[in-house]
Each structure stands twice: as structure tokens, then as C-alpha cells.
Image (cartoon, rainbow, N blue to C red; front, side, top):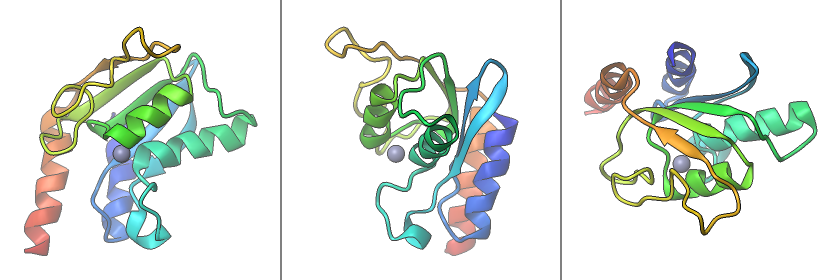
Length: 143
Ligand SMILES: [Zn+2]
């Protein structure tokens, strides 16, 4: 999660809302991402999607079984869907997102239920205060 926070700092440097994500397989980082919808002119360029794309390119496979995704903010509906499609085993997130979170805050796509053919587990609240503070500091500085 500390590395995810460092990736979130890259978003800050680019003027993007600071969210960072990385994908781990067998204790190795295989994908990294940070939020960059503004710079990429792409509404789907959330940190989680960027990390999934990075890992998919590296492994040459969109399916990423056995992986754990670490992200500083609770994933949204779009990212939760992509995470399930990518067959990610587990999501560990930091701060809850009371406006768009899809791991129970607003919607509950994760942990995925039996209607999906892939089971993705989910746990939040890891370094939640640090993950929330980087967002608060970003929005404070913009006001
Ligand atoms: Zn998202």
C-alpha cells in the first residue's frame, strides 16, 4: 500500500486526483497505475484500470488470476467490473469512497457474488487514513 501511495503522488504531480494502484503476483509487482483521466482524455483511465492494462501488456494476457490489486481508494463500479473481468483474486483498498465506492459504500460489486463466474475477494481500510489524507490535501490545495 505504501507503493500505491507513491503512485498516487505521481497523479498529484500531473494535477490528477491522487489515486494509485498496483497489481502483485507471487510477491512481485506486475502492474502499476495512477489516476490520469484528464491527461489521457479518457474517463476510463482510473488507477486500477491503468494497473490492469500495465500487467496485461507485461504478461500478454488480459486474465490475471492469482493476483492481488492494491489501490488507495475503494474501486468504482467501472473498475470493480474490470477487476472481475481480469480474474483478479483479491482487492485491498485504503480509503472508502462514500460517493462512488463499489465495495459496499454505494454499490456492492466486490467481493463479487456467485452471479459472476469469477470470485474476487475484497478488503478495505488498509492505511485508510494515509490514503484519505492525500486526497484531502489535494482538494484543499485546489480550493
Ligand atoms: Zn474506478
